Image (cartoon, rainbow, N blue to C red):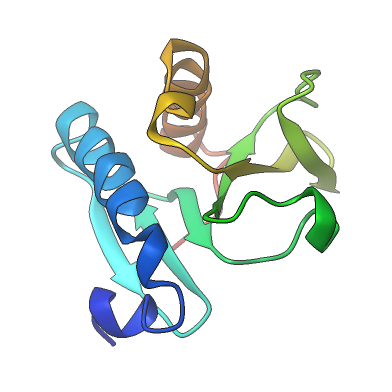
Length: 128
């Protein structure tokens, strides 16, 4: 499946996704991407980030244009920016963020992305 087909029902989110993907590949040039029916997965040795349209907030709480960024972290992230976090097994937390604007791709979010990548490069990340 290709990226444009993935965004077929969410064309307005494509510029937001493009900005996020550019950031991912700038920071992690060795990363690879896999486009699936329900998500786009980024990985190197292991998965570190996913983009989807998983509804992790009530519809009324979602911005008009949005996407969900999911990171795998070794700890429960305490931030108002976290939509949902789940400990999928001891020491591995799946953390979902709703991204509605390019401005949200800020230093704080990029630090969490760096942490997810570092975690994935350790033995703690999920295998691809």
